[in-house]
Length: 420
Image (cartoon, rainbow, N blue to C red; front, side, top):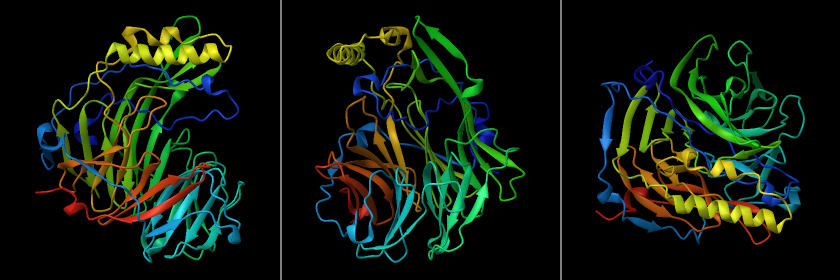
């Protein structure tokens, strides 16, 4: 398999998976703490079949196009006549008839809409039987509008046909996975693409009497249709993914993270060190895009402000501040993480959301064209997130004043978005 795995086997690539929600805990307890302790070995020579696309920062850094997202073509949302009340939309995909499918993780449901935004059917429910979910996370649209949903709790991938009848369930074989992946997608040829981390073999570094720094080995690999063999695309380890203070696990604020996006047979991986994105199409590494000197330094004053704000919030809640050791200078990386999210289209276009410190919102996305060149940036409204992009569209997740989610379809001519 001609992928980045052959030229980057053994790279130390830090990976952070999904943020953990602590329902029922006071907001101040859900601290988003600062950490670093990451290492990355020198890159080996990249497969000669790939092109390294280097973009001068000066060409794109100032270019920002505002997407107001004020006139959606279609809105896919709650529908009381169909007893659909969306709560937590995890993923969405545009269907061939310009309808959409939404995955609501809290409801454990797939909601299918027609092109006018009306609910056509609802699939799935809470449970462990066929077509039921406990913790659905990733959504993949396959040929013929079949959709695949991965559930890490049940360790299954479930395929639903457009009519919703007789879902096909693929269980994760224990000989291939010793634990459930962080994310898993089904590729058009029947292969799986998995994003894994094994916390059981992590190295623990103690900082102070209350804090543990947990390192998580990470792996991105492709498992063939027969499930008998796999190809490593990227592998490595991270010195710290999450922090335990007392009995609480907290998400890292400045920890380096790898982001993986999949659409059709296109796989995009944003690496944690620098502005580097690798795009794989089918079995081949299509290109590696880099932007030299694009990282922003992490200033100690920024870390101190975060520490002081969380300390003040702890005091206001009448609680002690346990996280002081985590803010030690030796735990901070030299630069801020570059990206906080990734979305990839079937044409190879990649959108990368800028990283935002905890309790702040990043509304700017970098746009990488199908040839691997950075076109510029787009700024979207602060209440929006991008769930899917295509050659001429995007699906945006919005929330109203009552925090009720909806998904909007917007037509975007990406090729004409930026002036020549």
